[in-house]
Amino acid sequence: MPPLLLFFLLVIVGTMAWGSLLAAPWVPTLSAQRKLLVDNLVIPPPNPSLSSPNDRLVERLRKEGKKSVTLYDLGCGSGSILFEFASRYPNAKCIGYDVSLLPLFIGAMIKLRHPVRYKNVSLRFGNFFTKHFSDADVVVAFLMQKAYPKFIATLKRELKPHALVAIEAWPLPNIEPIQTINGEKLVPWYVYRGL
Ligand SMILES: C[S@@+](CC[C@H](N)C(=O)[O-])C[C@H]1O[C@@H](n2cnc3c(N)ncnc32)[C@H](O)[C@@H]1O
Picture 1 (cartoon, rainbow, N blue to C red):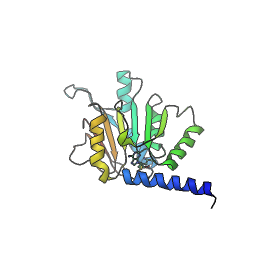
Picture 2: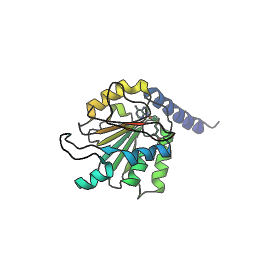
Picture 3: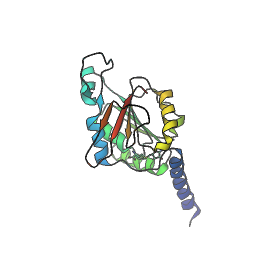
Picture 4: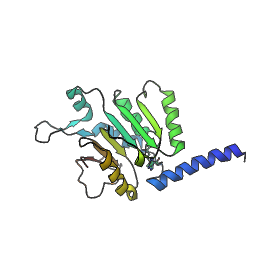
């Protein structure tokens, strides 16, 4: 095998293994699973004593006249969830971190094919445990449960009280979700606020 090819293979396999060890292997989120979240994510009123009803993200943004939200996908893989949000909310700032180079490369190719539609999507190489994301309005993640203690500590360090956290598949331990989104033949999304 040519040395350059061997080098690339080692880098791809090595970064995938790194992601698996840190928090989860790359398992793409299904298209229907992504739509389930984007269609149903509810934004509760900032002050629970207000009588204003819970709104879907799109309605809340329109009512508040807010131009943009900032969304992070921690362990974004190929960025498929970010692309789904960016298609639905063209003004949203969509940022993803991953340490695995193959899915990030696939995501970069998707962004290259649709530079206008996905202009607000930023895919970044990096370990999210060491990054700052305190400007997040929404954080999305799909991780192994073994990573939850460190993940929760990272969220508590970074997040503003208003930020929402949407977790795919397995709920965070000992924290009550404000919303659970279920879909037929899909795993649930658990949504939290004020960790
Ligand atoms: C279950 S996959 C998420 C897939 C993604 N939703 C998609 O549709 O492509 C989890 C991802 O988290 C990444 N990951 C795990 N720990 C990480 C860390 N500490 N920093 C950045 N990425 C991490 C893995 O490399 C993997 O790609």
